[in-house]
Image (cartoon, rainbow, N blue to C red; front, side, top):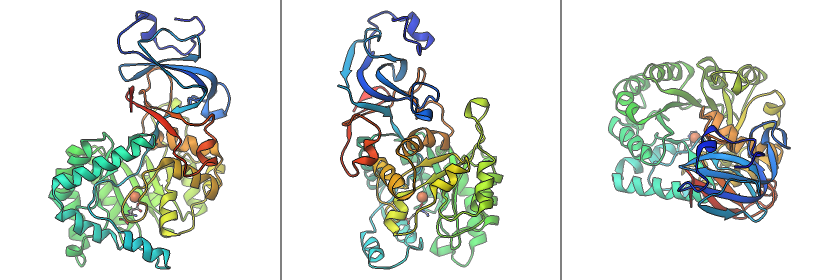
Length: 418
Ligand code: NIG
Ligand code: FE
């Protein structure tokens, strides 16, 4: 290997020049590493004329094009931009039916209230396992084609013990990032007994869901769950070893964001209606991820939801200027945001939320990884998972500059070209 390969992992020094299964992505015009302090672009860590060597699903070397160790196979990026695969840290893929009619009504002036969740709950309960599995796999594949290599998947349209457990079992077949959202809304049959429903969520439903879940989430909003219920449910989840994330401050101001910070949530999502105190609370958690265990509560913004509900966008600039760590995710679901496209969310974030293209690309990759407390994705350095995107463009800027254009030329997921 080359003496100039300054970013080699220890493994590379010992491997033979022609080890089986290695793949070199060479001739990269612009490589976004998300290793701050590398090359240009601040947090994006941009390297020009670079190459990436992967083996057994891992990045094992990053360095200058032309200096790379020999590999079994080679992909010529032909001067294109390469970036880490997108990390979509918020998606609801386990459901049946759609709500296109509700969308049309909104575009004709109806407001979004979240009330349509119950429509999808009815359809989901009536669906077979096979039907749910087909939808999850279709949407997972759709996201992968658009560059998403890590995706978090929530339950939340079953809302019975059996339906929440099967939703998560099916989600876990395609992702390791699964979230129990039994507290999405109070289902109709418990409408006048919300305390009893919270008891069900904390007891038998959580017990049945936990084996398939890494996270617990609550929709903390007027009309869904108040702060007391949310705190109780999230504490039960933590006691079962689940990490905390939340739907907070989507439809109006409320206690969600500060409750998330209090409980050490990895992320509070939506963040559309924030007070100065909410922003201060989030900013107080922002620490250097290299300094020790991750304790940041990320603000995950979901501009697809504001687009599809014709609502005002969250003020990303205000969060970023206060030093809050921001992620972007799709919120893919049949009601408020039926998109699986991270490039679309990047374009919205830049155009509508005053993020720079660099901030949006970081938020959709490294930011999503922070929101999932992952250090092996959203970054391209030795030891990282070999998840990367080759663009049909010379720069990451084109993701926002050319909205709606299919710019994902090729995806490597776990080192496998897709
Ligand atoms: O994140 N806000 C709560 N849950 C989803 C919407 C679900 C739906 O409308 O079906 C969201 O926007
Ligand atoms: Fe959501």
